[in-house]
Every structure is written in C-alpha cells, then in structure tokens.
Length: 355
Image 1: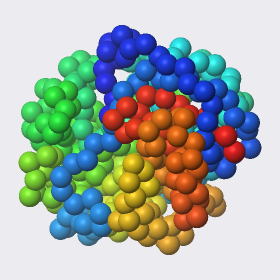
Image 2: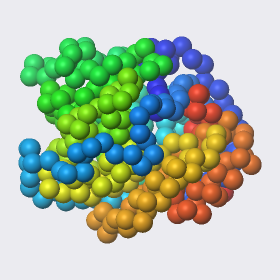
Image 3: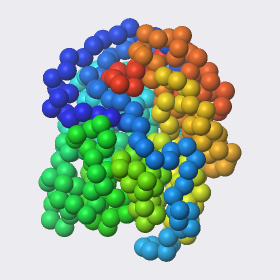
C-alpha cells in the first residue's frame, strides 16, 4: 500500500465528502466522510503472488530461536475496520472514528507526526478497539527517518547496501530490502517496531512481505530461498518479542506463508489475521479470493478467536455506494471482513459506510 512523504501530505488540501455506501458489519451508525489528503495506491510487483512458492521456504529454519512460539492474542472483535495513513487533524473527530470502527490500521511512525500517543488512547475507546500500526517489512521508504538516521548499534536502510534489492518499480522513493539480512532484521525488531509500540500500537499491519514470493526471476525485488526464509524468520522474531500484540499480514497470502515453517513452528500460527487488497474491486481477482479461502480452510484459532481475514477494495470514491454494497456482499459471502475506499490510485479518504 502506497503512501507519500509527510511533507507532501501537508500540502494537499483535504476534501470533505458526504456519507455513503454499505458497511462492514458493525453496529455503529453512519457518519460523514472526511477525506484524508493521503495519496496511496496498491503496488503490484512482479514475481509469484497467487499461490506460488519459493524453493526452500517451506522447510523451516533452524537458525535463531527454536523455542515454541505461541500464537497472538487474536481479535475479540472483527468489524467494522478501516485503513488510513494520513494524520490526526485531517482525519477529523477521533471520537467519531473510535465510535465507528473497531479495528484501525494507521501509520504510527513517530517521525511522521501523524498521531500522538494521546490520540491513540482516544481511538482505542477504553479498550473496545484495536489500533494497529502500519509496518513495512519488505521495503523501505526513503522518507522514513530510519532510511538515514538511526542510533548507534543499528544500520539504517540507506546505509545497508548489502540488504538493498533494488528500487520498487514505479516508485523512486522506495527500495526493496532483503528481509533475511541480519542488520535489517535488527533494525526492524529492535528499533522500528519498539517505537510503534511506544506510540500505543496494539499490533502491526505487516506490508510488502510478498517479497518472499518473488523468487529470483524478477528485477523488481528478487528474493532467493534464504531471503524468503528470512522473511518468515523476521516475523517470528517480532512475535517472540511481542507475544501479546496483534499481527495482521497484508497480501503475501500464497503457499510460501501459508505452508512455511520458521524456528520449528508453522508461520501461519504467528498471525492473528490477514488482509488482501483488490480482491473484488476495481476488478474481481479469483486467484486472490482463492488464496484467502485457503487460509480460511485452515481454521486457525489464535487464542480461541476466529482468524481474521479481511478484504480491502477500491471502489472509486465514498460516493460509490452501490459498488461498495456489491463488494461488501461478495466479501461477506466468503466469510471475509470487508472495507472499501476510493480508487487505488488515490486511497485518500476514510469512508463511513452506511449499514
């Protein structure tokens, strides 16, 4: 999922739209729509992403900790949910957001200044809601503070030439990273993630891990077997550090993650849920729906809760109520938890869909 640098965000004027659409199964009333000023788009990378696997990634890893890793806390609630990468002022009334959504994916990187810890407390609504922070694992944005500046003992993304796997095609400000690189893993686990937790995150919304599905026959983030296994190991290391936080993985739902093993445990057992973009809109993707269905058939039960499987579709705007209702109906019919936003080239609003 694409976001632009905070400096650019501050120059974009927010747009206020009217309430519209179907909802995602929540009990709260509809509200007005506050456009987020956040430009975003789905990123489609080359390499296998629909059921493919990289040789060697399902055999497990004996490196690092081999202790038993418990699953996460699971979701006590499933819907409504939303995703938003703008700042708190643009989002509008945090209390209204907190009373509408139960699961929220926002960017809590303190360098962006998007949200203060006190804002996160408001969004949690006395513990009724789960606030997850976006955490980019497979690539590193050049506008992140840790691209250039990190404390002693860490190697920044920009300085870690050994981990850089080339530009994210179509994006001049983002570089694929070798998720098996020891310095990069240390940066994520012991510097980037703790700062998100300090902001109040209940867990992580893990993005761009689909690099583990790329293989080596691509110039857009090539990832060999060691790299792919390293990606699974990276999530395990995060889970070992944060056993009580919620982990949701976006995209990367093929066999590599579904059947992979790390440190002697099934990779899938480390997660509380998954989400996938563009399953039903702007066009239907049968292969992605099948991947989510395969996860559902695993009947995972993190901490006794149902495994959370969500869809994130782009319907062209919050005024596209009829299209949103169709998308929501198709997602729910499969047992998934839907959310819809504006066109994938401009995911810049939060839509408060009507029931």
